[in-house]
Length: 161
Length: 213
Ligand SMILES: [Cu+2]
Image 1 (cartoon, rainbow over the protein chains, first blue to last red):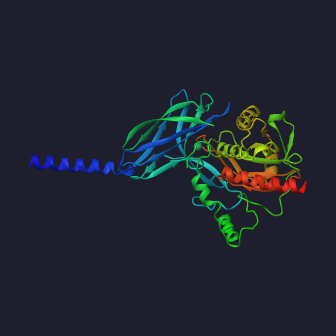
Image 2 (image 1 turned 60 degrees about the vertical axis):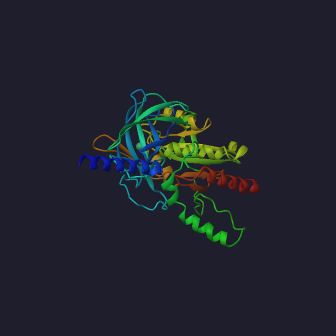
Image 3 (image 1 turned 180 degrees about the horizontal axis):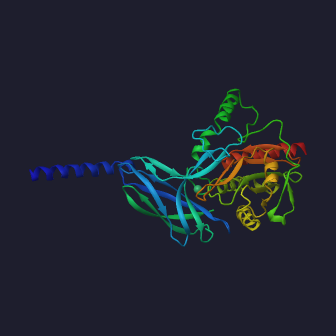
């Protein structure tokens, strides 16, 4: 019996390795192309963008932090369509004139197995609140992302013009 | 897709130009010689906005009219400096577009109006717009009625409201308005218009402008 179990898990391990070798969709969750926009003197807020490639099983992004030397706080945000009274209009047709946009906090960003979730202008972004100093193009800083399953992943954001 | 100077703005790109795309397909079907279809939206008749003005933070509070200098074009945008996503993306796209039109960029002025004057002091406005455009104009008024008056003819929507927990929610429309020396609103680009498309529109606007001159 122990033999059989050992043999079985050995076979499973080979299978998992084989699957992992077959392509990105089955690799571990990865965060790439991490960048932040340079900010002007006096500007209180900043932003970080990146791309998340989901791993073999589904996961979720739950939170984000940056060093205190960079900003007082960081939060997951999403830019959404809204009318000017502040009520968001999900799925609203942007073809109308006078439409508004706003940002809202997001508590959980699902990352499907093998899926790609992009944090980009006009969509999901990390909002930096209370910038300590202006972000200068060419500089870089650490960003810690907390995932439900993958745990903490530390990446480096490059500040771009 | 996610290059350094022209990041993708996926969701907005998909939604906005569907009608335009249909139009250009129609035109394409009729042959090569169709009229130029701008990426921006053209309103007819052109709204007249040249009589409108706001104090210019970057020029000691002197009135700045919504009208271009002779032979030039004015690009006008309404936002706030605490906006880290939409506003800087738009200004960076404009900067990228101006780098694609050669000498003509010297005939384009950019002005940024704050819809959040309580938090955007004159000094902040100046630093912000100059971070993108060395000669950019920052416009700001403390008078909410004046801001509403100049916003209406353009179709700018905005609201700044404090939630009970103190968080200040800002909603604003995010178009870039192109205005000529007569104060006519020639064209407006929605958020997410690619710099290449903005550059192409500007080239055509200048072609018309120089043909008329
Ligand atoms: Cu935000």
